[in-house]
Image 1 (cartoon, rainbow, N blue to C red):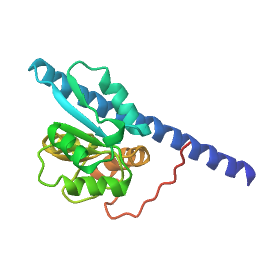
Image 2 (image 1 turned 180 degrees about the vertical axis):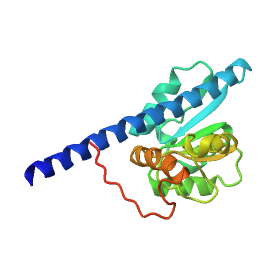
Image 3 (image 1 turned 180 degrees about the horizontal axis):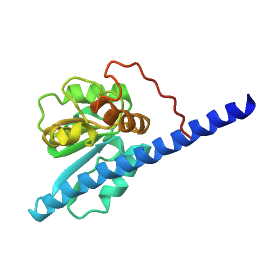
Image 4 (image 1 turned 90 degrees about the horizontal axis):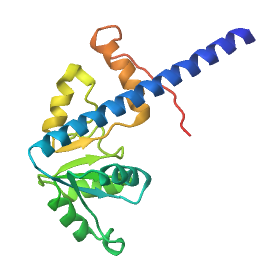
Length: 193
């Protein structure tokens, strides 16, 4: 009995490890896609203006660090004393081509509501809009390339989470090919840290 339990535990750990590796691969694939789009803009001598709302948090700092090294992107930065001022934030978002919302869920919802009707591309890194109507789920590998086109043409993109990406990346192809019924009730347990 104990040997069987150990085998199940090891199999579960191996599955989690492979899910993690696959999710990481998907995230890097998405980053390469974004870089290709930026290169295309650079070839046309178009410098994109990017604002990171919440640039002092972990996610915002990482995005700022990566984009700050690029010569084809102009980062719009707010001074510390005005970074929480709604008027200053709204002005920064409206003057940008792309805005990353690196905010808690409620703040991301408030900001998105404040920016209704804006032509700025907004990418929300929180969980607030992942299933919200009018937002495109930012996972280009879904639906045989159709999702990539949706993302390319969307003004509102919800960034997928790492745990969900791992699960979806494994299950979506199985569902699309009829190996798992679309109405099947599935669950996935994952840990971080």
